[in-house]
Amino acid sequence: MKLRFSSNDMQELNFVREYAEGFGVDTSIGMKEIKSSFAYKGVESNSHRIYLPGVIVSMFEGIRSTGYEYGLESDFPYMQMHFEISTNGCEYFPKAGTEPETLIYTGQHALLFYPALKGQLKYLPMANAFSVEIELTIDFLRRIFNNDLGVLRTFGESIEKLQPSIMGNRSHPITPRMKEVIFEIRRCAYTGSLKKIFVEAKVIELLTLQIDQINTGLDNPVTSLKREDIDKLHEVRDRILQNLVTPYSIEQLSRMAGLNRTKLQEGFKEVFGTTVFAYITQARMEQAKDMIVDGKYASIAEVASRIGYKNPQHFTAAFKRTFGYLPKDLKM
Image (tube, rainbow, N blue to C red):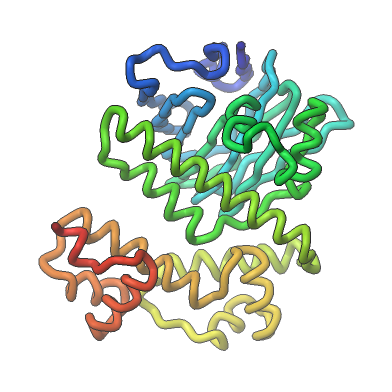
């Protein structure tokens, strides 16, 4: 099983990655990890791969001062869960005009399948990029669904027929819970067999969240937004993330975006999968969690203040609603 990468711009991207049959792992615990990095022509990338039977989790972090692209060609059926956490996105264009393009931009995810890869993959420029790719075998999918891919609907039918497909026919917004699960994988402190069990469970949870969101969207279709409105909503989201301590009102955000209140609220939920204020709260809580775990701050009250809470009790209540436990529990 081979995946060939080819690039005219970056010699480092000319290589062949070999996969064990069924993504098998030749270690006693059935898991291995590989970390690597490279820097070339304005691109700095650090990767962390976790190999499990039937699953490969790849987390990429780095800087792309310029965009880059390369050719992909596989000799085996390729399935991937893809999450663009903080990037401008990536685009895959199959050479076969009959196959669907995969377009995944910042804050989006997709579940995709190709009987074989043969096309161009393009990464857009971005500082502080973070994306996650989880490769799955068909056998892994059959195992967790007990050989019944019916829950995947037409996507499952395409897999059985070895036909290219993107579940839901497009990319979808990453929800706060999806993002939290991804960060739980990245922060996992377990080792050995416990880490193997933990990571596999989180991959299955992520897949469940993807399938549920996509199926819900298929059952309750929404009106597509114009590209310019989506861009405005991304600008609002970026402004929120850059100024988490600022208590923006809906009116202020509406003026920033040049959208009326209703279009902002409904459009934001369509693009990002949650309400404006739920998104702000989740982002604040995730930042607070990282700050507490980091241990650089003297008290929970200081962390609360730094993410915009004047009242530590209000922060503690919001934190518990978000994660199900108290901030002080992270210090134990």
